[in-house]
Image (tube, rainbow, N blue to C red; front, side, top):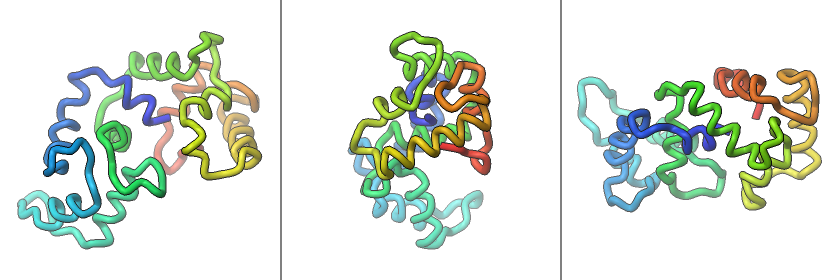
Length: 165
């Protein structure tokens, strides 16, 4: 869901994140590899950033990957990972919700999420995803089949510790 919000940010909201991405994309390829991330973060000599260990840099890289098998982090994945540093408002939530609710039903279903993610992103069985969806939506939405806009905003506002998806 954060990736959807990432696509809805306005230009002024992404400027700082873009500058940070460009610092890490030393080859100018539009993606960050673990090798270049290590190179930049471990060799960085700044009073505001301490030297990081290999494990810390790997943790940072892994937190930005959308899929376990990814060997690079693309700009939009970096953007999604950086959302905690960027203010997100009603406009962003509305745009993201409308992108998921492409049929303009007024709610989102598990099928909307799966369509957006695509079949390559499914790392769990469909049955386990349905179970996760039902458990998660029942907590927030008091229903297991739909997410209305107000509930979508609540989900997007949850802390990482509370993340249900």
